[in-house]
Image (tube, rainbow, N blue to C red; front, top):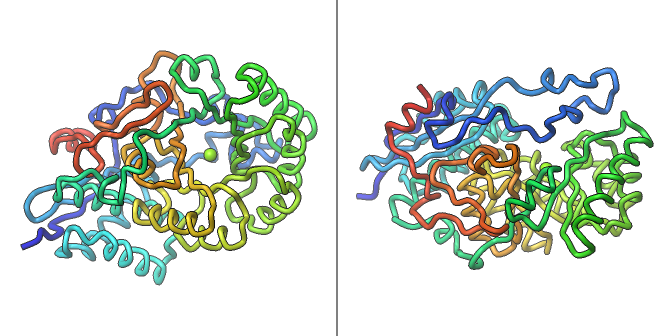
Length: 390
Ligand SMILES: [Mg+2]
């Protein structure tokens, strides 16, 4: 008889070192704390911590009736853990262990009818879905990138996100995404500062290097247009996250007013329906779902189909930073890039970069080949999982 789901259990990750992640202090997109959700207003300057959610990561373990287990991860543990343990776990107990599409549908529709399937609910769905895909691959003895029709290529090109170009180049990367460090509160001086950042990178890296700019979703449409116009001469590969996630009129406005810029967004969009709407309206050129936030591997596969049908690019957010993104980017033909967010200092292992998973591959010379172990290749014992959440 095919294995069934015996148990799904989530807990806050308290000891990341038990999962092989070196502790080097909190990873930060912006070590100077200049950009945060309220940084459009000078009154909140320097208050990044005040607006950061206090919750850490989640470890979700799905165990089959034969004892095989899979591991899913996400963040925002405080509200997410009870959604999983109190609602999804009893709902899915006894289901066929490999029926990931059915499980996803049950979680999304039941959430939608009760409190919505976006936002925090989507984090909970992601963790369970990833644990179940890891379990499915382990039950079948096949890496997830093969389960989804890959590999799509021998190796995937990486780009590094961060502003320490010397360190990122030392690590072998040749494509880079810079972090915009000032927003509308800095007015015209902020646009000049951003232009200096991009101009410096272009002159250092040469005319052919791929350079992207991530603006953090705190701009508004008119400021994003001013930045886009100022940066046109530097031929950015794309401009990312330039409006608040639900500012749909803003995205349409920027698209209309920057007709030749390549625009990217999606790490803070949830559910496949949101991406279907974005694709239909052609609000951006590059869709960037985050596998730990958008609804897991099942959601990313649906979004990949939407992107392919609309002939839009898929660039999974942080694809190189965990085993989940690594397997999906390796298995999906439309995903050409694997992003490595480097939130650790020079000389520190990329396992400390951000949300690494045990046993995952690290990029070499700017290229990624994921682990070929079954499931997502998450190499962890029950004892290590116990220690991680103890
Ligand atoms: Mg981003």
